[in-house]
Image (tube, rainbow, N blue to C red; front, side, top):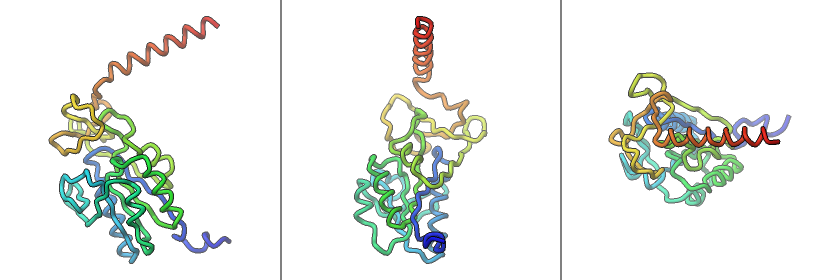
Length: 212
């Protein structure tokens, strides 16, 4: 048996906890961090500096659980700040980071570090949020958790923006701006235009096939 097979934990890993707003992603990240600390593993927590809704230097869940974290302005800064003794790196609101975050977490995992990330998998339009699609692709494990739809109480997988006029993907806010919704009640802005474009392309494809 190989060395890696006989010594669990010597190889790094990449874990992603994702879902819509108000689903408990940060709470799950904190839970995993606390278990690592109980196991006496050196942990460092990072958060994007842009996310200062609750606290400048803490990750805070909607249920008011919190842990001290280091705010950073770029993904490369995480790599620069990780200590040699660190065994677990936790990153909250990872969707706000630049595309280099995928390179950073892969480097950390190759160094034998367990990387735990929490973030929104979709933006308010139902599209992949920032680097999340790439992170989900390289992850060793993915936990997609649900919120509760504010309209019907069904499991919610979407984040609904109350004012769709602001089309910026990044708009930090809480219940004043967002609600968790199920697919049936997501009501994405521009959905009619998307459907129209789909049927136009479908009809064009059919016409080309008939002319062959």
